[in-house]
Image 1: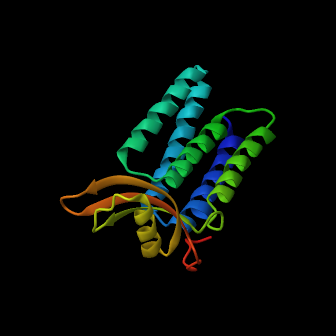
Image 2: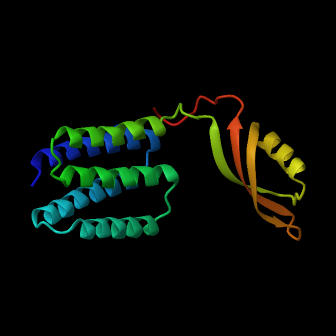
Length: 188
């Protein structure tokens, strides 16, 4: 059993959950999910390694765990990234990698990648939102102007999901950039 790797994993998952994820996203329900997927995966991987099971069984387990969790609740892309990072930390922590600095480096790369990629100041003014308008708009230029007016933003992309001429409504997914910072970015 790789006790040093498991110790590193406990430190890394604590940083991921309590230092990065929760302060930025404030979803308490996912704290336990990230902790348990990590701890469960490190336990199972440690057992597989101790029994010298083939790596294909481990990857099969990884795939099954991913599918089960990702299908059980709706997660946004950031939450999926944290989820996969928690799983990866567990796998890396359980593997007896030599020299040990490889384990440290791989875990650091994962945590640094999350810290930078999910930092609120990185593209902090860019948003994606589904908007339902109480009018059917079929002209893209008119739709873009209406959305920019409503959102007070520069619209970069529009995907019309539904235009209902009978009920007089339009549902769009809009990707936009806020023109001025509201100062209400989610936590650092």
